[in-house]
Image (tube, rainbow, N blue to C red; front, side, top):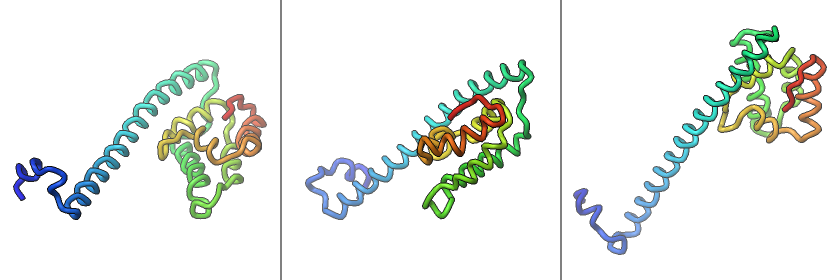
Length: 157
């Protein structure tokens, strides 16, 4: 069917198979468009967050509060947290002890900011949003905020 004829054929003159194919195509295009738009929005949000984090890290740096680890190490921490929340038991739970083991290595607020910055947005969620979706309030306190507070970190999720 030539393209001109295809676009000029009224809906009621199309067969059932052709209607299904058209609807499936529109659905696929809509889904891909939605995913691309969501990814773009995530990039814009992350860029804004990185600017804010950079400013906060500069202020802490002036107060002689500096990150304790290399950028690579923060990447390892971020990947470990993501894995503890997503991959643990093949999506059947959260490895709270794994989260705690990483969070108790945060020595100051600069460490937490660098971890947040390195974690970025994964599957459309920031680290704070992941914690809120995976942990109850009591667990968030016990596995995330308390271990950091014992090291003098004032940042709270």
